Image 1 (cartoon, rainbow, N blue to C red):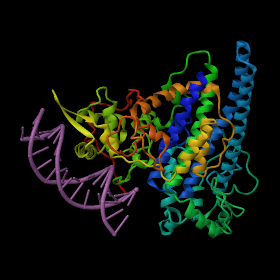
Image 2: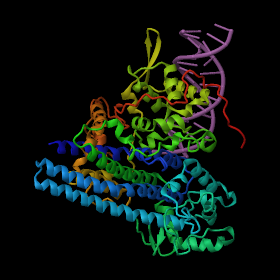
Image 3: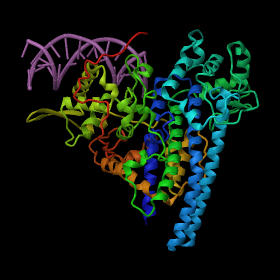
Image 4: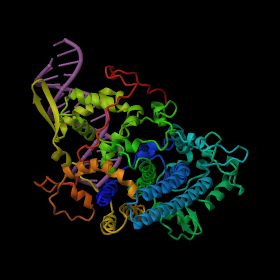
Length: 576
DNA sequence: AAGTTGGTAAACAATT
DNA sequence: CAATTGTTTACCAACT
């Protein structure tokens, strides 16, 4: 049965996604007004935000994405329902059971939608309270687009810089992880006309629309304390927490202890983004599968990039003002934080799906040099590259590496020499570099931090539940994220997704085996799947990347000239 | 607290 | 000769 095959793939894919803590990307592609997960990730990495700001940002993003989805979803839901039923009736082959099943699934979807909507409204309320979304009575209601336009990355960055840097005297309030008081300065500084976001909503009547001013700071502070977005009715409202806190100070203490910006909360962010992505993916697939059910399947690669509607604008990341520019957010000083290892972002799919982003935005790719070099080599047809070809890959793929060439080229050479996983092979016309995959995996221990119960949940529940649902439940339970996808998400129309996953799966299966005796608690079944032919020694777990089966397309950045020498490009480091 | 890992800088040799 | 390629050491910061 095709359906069974599909679910098998789907199941594995979902598990894989969560095991890898894969940062979703297609959301950003399809709803370009929203911050990309990468930008979110960068924000996380830079740790310029307090957990509260992060939470707000996350909620904001979710609200935006959900709102954008909701409008179209209703239409498509109806469309699809009718079309499917029609098709099935005409085909006459489907037993009534299946028709009923389809109808049930439609219902489930709609329930899910309702939950999303409720969540969204909750988010919006929270945002209003926070002052991040100001609803101005005097202004005419603007279409959703204008809200989205207020969310361009640069402005957000500016916003956060403003928030975190505007009051060094009271810096501990906003910028220190160890304290959680989102001071009124934070609130008032974001609630400026410049940065306030207009929402296509009726003006609220509860007085929350007024902008806070410095004069009202103390009063506002009181107000804020009473209206802390995460505190209400003596209960912590962090998603899924609901811890009882007698008073506000104890709540703050609780917040500080339990919801600090650590691996756990960032994992929550990722999972939530993932959830949204999965939902959107489903929405997209439902509609596309409906439209092309009898036709050929859409190409797998095109799936994540297919716009929801033909009118969806191109990603603003490639457009003027929205491009993340050097002056806006380029990293100051050396970045010593490690990304890929910590967050287990699969480099191949990240790069593949965010090619345009990395090509145009001067954002440092969240991977180590070693990972990038390996990626470059493995992407090549012969799985080998000369040093210069590696250089070229860097500059071709990443705008970030079109500057400070001396620095990163030195780093590349340094890495090539230093790491055993890079093997120099003498060639007829010089030398090329190859990757010793075993060595590479050896030196990259991986953990899924503190989630044995997640593994357990997945293992025990995926067998009999809707796979995605089970994985979501498990993941969100682990990460204390409320379940707003309780409705069954199964839908036969998602078949086309299977082929998209097959590629990734092929890579995984082909890739790995383990010594088979791994029973460490923090290990996921998917990780175990990864080691297939690595038997020699007790290796550390994989990186979960698999052999790069998600092939990147070869379109070059329009503004990148491969012949140009970026080495001496004047860098506007300019004045501080 | 110590060890590990990764990024940067730099000295230097070998090769082209 | 210069430029490129490759090796190595040192230091720092983040992380475990």
